[in-house]
Each structure stands twice: as C-alpha cells, then as structure tokens.
Image (cartoon, rainbow, N blue to C red; front, side, top):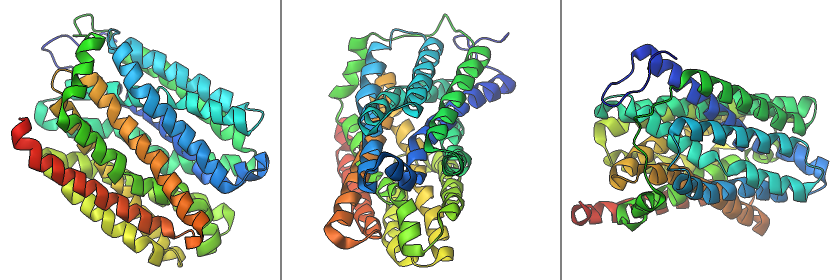
Length: 396
C-alpha cells in the first residue's frame, strides 16, 4: 500500500475504507466462529453424544479463552507494531478453528474452543485502536462501529451460513469455514494495512496502569453483567425455537438472520448514539435491553413475534461500540489493554449468560426463562452504570 499511516497525517478516505474492510473481515471470521456453535447446538450434541447444556459449556470455554487471552496478549504484545500483532492474532485464530474442525471428541473440542478464543479480544481491541486513529475524535465511535460491522454481519450471514452448512454436511465444516475466512483476513491485513514505523508503542508496565483506574473496572463491569442477557437468550435460541415456538430445524437459520439484522442496526446506532450522548448512551441502551428481554418469553410462542423479538435482542450489540470508546477514554495512555479488555468483559458475559440460563432451564423453569434471567442481568448492568456515573466527578 503506497500510502502509509504517518504520525500526524490521517490517511485518505480510500485507504481508510480498505483498512476498515480488512479489519471487518477479521471480525466476520471471529463472529462466525464464536456464534456458529449456538445454531448447531442440537447437531453437536447428537454427534458427540452429550446434552445440549453441555454444548453450552463449549461456548463458555471459548469465552474463557477470550477472557484469559485479551489482557495477556494486550500487555505482552504492546511492544509489537499493531500491523504485526493483528497478523499474528488472526493466523492463530485460524489455526484454532481448523483444530476445532478436526477435534476427535468433546474434551478435545473443549480445549480447541478455549485456544480459539485466546486472540479474540486483543484482535478487536487493536482493530478498534487502528480505526479510531484514522478519523477525527468526534467520529471515533462510528469508525469503530464500522469495523465491528464484521462481527454483526457474521450474525446476519456468517452464523446462519455456518448453521446451514453444518446441518447440510457436518458441524465440523462450519469451523473449517471459519478457519478459511481467518486466512483470507491475514492476506487482506497484510496487503491493505500499511506498516507505520512511527507508531507509538507502550511497554507492558505502561499498559498495566489501566488497571489502577476505577472507571476502567466499572466500564468492564457494565459489559460483563449488562451484556450477559443477550448471550443468555441467544445461546439457547435454537432449542427454544424448536421446543417452544415449534419451528423445524431448517428454519432456525432464518430466525438467526433476524438476530443479525438487529445486531447490524444496533452496532451502527450504538456508535452514532455514543458520538451524540457520550457515556449517557449506555443508560438508554441498557434500559431498552431490559425491556426487550422481559418481553422475549411472551414473544417466543409465535413465529412472527419471536422473529421480531430476536431482532430486537440482537440490537443490544449497540453496547459494544459505546463501551469500546468509553474504555479508550478512561484508560488514557494505556489504551491497548483497556480496548482488548472490552471483549474480555463481553465474553465474561458470554460465559455468564449461558451458565445462568442453563441453570434456570435445568431447574425446570423452561427454555423461555432465559429472557427473565437476561433482563435481570441488564438491570444489573444499569446499577453498575449508576455507580460509575456517581463516581465520575471524583475520578476525572
């Protein structure tokens, strides 16, 4: 790429577009890899001779990998140039998914899902920093949301495609597809993201200073708790649609596509809303989330109402770009760790949501109880938001 990202010089609109596209393809790969198993839950359970709630533990294993990998990689990878780090992370992600496709049994698949999750948070964190660095400050949230379109488009296209492919052939092909998209991302980032030798890099100790700031921890708490509601519902969506709504399995990808539409809309609205309202946008997003999750159990009994409900649950993704920029602001000069930790927080939510939802289902409250559990988590996120807002004047 002829135009480099030099210090003090923002790249042209064409270069920005190509870089955002390359980074978004990586998000598409990660989003498809993270969520594919949710749509294939019945298929994986049958193939591995385990219960569907045990397949939920595979989701949690991936999420745990994100939680562990995001801060570690962000700290120890902080001395690398962002281009090099992105290439390494995506290559590792691709290998983890190829290994998942070849896993001989439940235990090995659990291990490979954990390994696949390790680069997730750091990739998105570094990608967000790259996107934000290319635009004026008042357009950062929208730039980050454009990169995050990759993961939301995965919910619309990648996840239903992987679900369809897994149902048609075998669930292993879904992870093979994800690994292939990961390889394509490596090529795109190598071609389109210029190498900037003037890029400022932090030491691991400098990055760790983010952990001293209360607002960093509170923002991570909002994501870990408030976002768990979406994963609580989405993780058990396939069996809910089959057992409660009465849909045939081959219709599940269609409803999953509605979730993807909601996620794309929510992602773009979240970026726009944060640029307008700043931190107050989080209050409105979480309040809306609590309401739509409370309505989900009522909507689940009709195909039309559940499709609309699933679309609105997907719009909870609006929280992602808002909290991403919030973390970059409150972390000050330790942005890599904070930005990567945003996705660790969301994957704590991804582990917490299925776990709490699975407990409610196992206790006999039914598949739709995930909506009530999810609403409680959104309200919990609002409480943490209130705490952060109350303390903010003293943390300035």
